[in-house]
Image 1: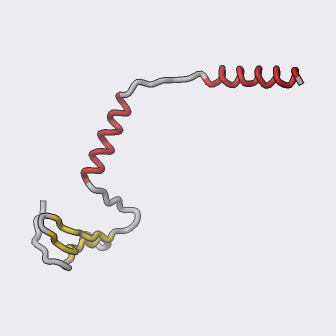
Image 2: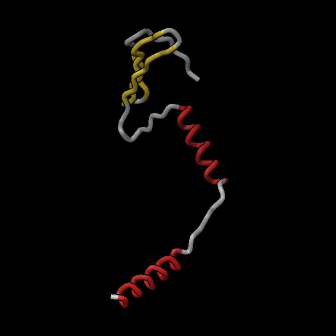
Image 3: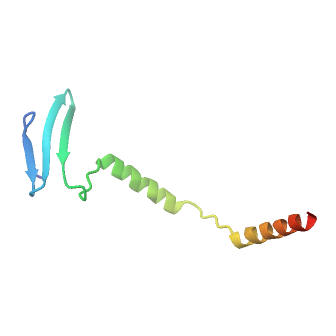
Amino acid sequence: MLILNRKVNETIVIGEDIRITLLGVDGEKIKVGIEAPQEVKVLREELLEATRDTNMQALDAPTISFDLSKVKKAKDVKDTEEVEEE
């Protein structure tokens, strides 16, 4: 891990097209601006981990399946009965 000290409004450049600028410091919070090409994903790590955890829980959830062909047949029969009544 590279560790750099930066002052407010100083920038770090990664490659040719990613710029990280320290915008401000407020107590223990630091405001960072990131400029990157649209195809580069920039994610907060805690959100990425939360999404990963949710996806893992979804994989472990029980699966319920329905036979939709029976639902369609029942609807067709009902529609036919309604037409015959008219």
